[in-house]
Amino acid sequence: MRVDVLTLFPEVFEPALQSSIPGIAARKGIVSYHLHNIRDYSLEKHHKVDDRPYGGGPGMVLRCEPAFRAYEAVRAMDERPGRLLLLTPQGRRFEQAVAREFASSPRLILLCGHYEGFDERIRVGLPAEEVSIGDYVLSGGEIAAMVIIDAVVRLLPGVLGHEESAQKDSFSEALLEHPQYTRPPEFRGMAVPEVLLSGNHGRIEDWRKAQAALRTQDRRVDLLTCLDEKQENG
Ligand code: 6GU
Image (cartoon, rainbow, N blue to C red; front, side, top):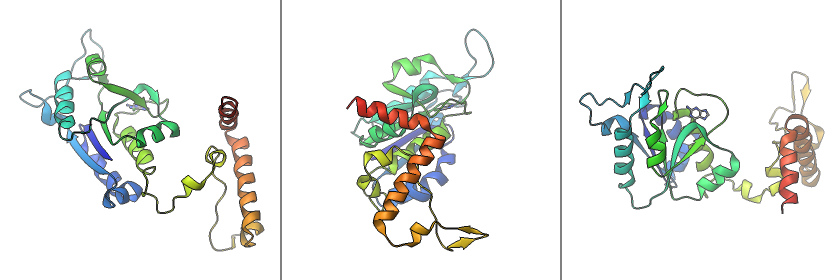
């Protein structure tokens, strides 16, 4: 997969994309990241990318020309058209099913806004899908873009050493994770559940499934309701 990011702050992506799973995926050659500064595509003499909103009001708005020119130049860098994602709190809510959908694309182009927003003609004039990572306001799309890249890249075949998620049935995948323990067997009076030390893989699997169900029931009943609806709808 090829990932292009159009941003005013390309430097904030470097550590996130070089570390942990996103970094491993790149080193394995499964994904390549390409960072582009929108400012480089501004035709203004001081490479200004924002301007005051028509009609007045606080804040600044991302101008059309640098955004369109950046997108068009970047799109032409590779023959695969890919999907253009516009990061905005007004977008479609990003969730695991959307991550799986994006993971099937050979290319993603993420356009990060800053300031108070995008000129409306960027939304209308570019073939963009607007995406939000949740109901809160971030100062810019960069952190949201990193969230999306991380969630998508870890789904690409060969990225995770253990292809466990492929083995997991759809039921357990829809639940919260069961508790995990590692050595020592007792720490400050807190013991590891006996079943995990038993070596009985059948019992361990049953215990984990039960714990995941309990935890989901306790903390996120909405996930169970959602699962029921999915099963009813086939
Ligand atoms: Cl994608 N952008 C911004 N600025 N804020 C957000 C968001 C995106 N998703 C949730 N809040």
